[in-house]
Length: 409
Image 1 (spheres, rainbow, N blue to C red):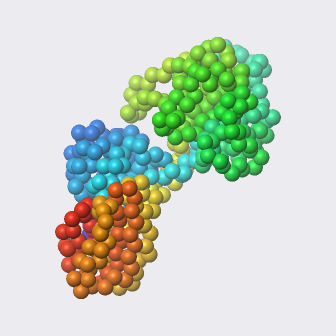
Image 2: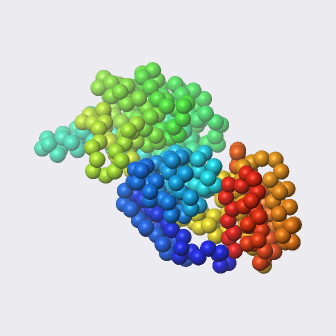
Image 3: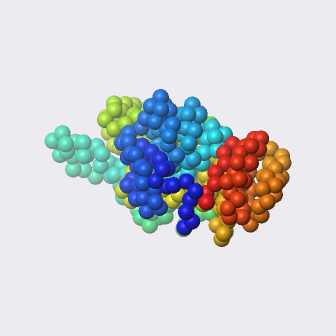
């Protein structure tokens, strides 16, 4: 590994929200030592103050990184979202500041899929209400409305990485699998893609949602299509809180049309452990409420910690931005006997020509170069003659529409 131009022990890393120690270990093994950890999320005003001297920020899902926060983060190079989403970060503002944002979209896939299967068994056997009765001292030994999974039909809404993993596990348990997705997907095993959501709802004994939140998916399961769900079915939501109408779901459970539900995500969630939690489904029979823990296993958190930390280290050490949501993706292998410079800029005509002109005027040669653009942002990784980096860097900073430059080695 080449020695970086900026000492790693002076790169400040801030971790919030109990990020897995695997991330800290991964950074430490790469030579980073200045790591501060804070257990919970910070408010916008607290984060604005705290982030002033931070180079790398690690968060999970509760911390909101707004435009105001990013404007205060003059030294920030990268944000690691140690979770599957990035919606808690203003990605446009991050791009404007030349800050790379990374996440781990697939590391908790197995954890979520296993919980779906486990909760499906519990709901089909009506275990939640029998468990609650036992805790109240009531013996409720009966087989009424209690069913095996084998031979039943599972309907999966959203056949991405998690939905397809659920499909494999479900089929191994003897379930028939149907799935609905807005895109044509390759079915795994004997799963069948259904072109009509109504058909899936009418045919499934178990319905599980695995879709992102967007304008199109807000209240995706609403009062109108809840009425089309097969009588006696159960429904699970381990995706996003606003994709299902909980009031309509409550009514359907009360009317015995739906046998039960498992909900892991909610329209409004508490900021931290111990805060008051309210849900319209609380106290209902055969309803499982979990505190957004679908991906919260030690294995998943370790995988996420390692993956996101590795992406950030590759960006800091090599300029590799693969997997970034805010700046264009580039992966250029290091060249021997060169200095590497990163140049993030507004995507306007003539930038590459100006960059090359600066290098030529400095009397340096380009050994390797890669440019990629994404929306309003351009990103160039430049390998030039060793020893000329500082001179070229100063001139690059003076180019109009430059957002951020950095010499790596």
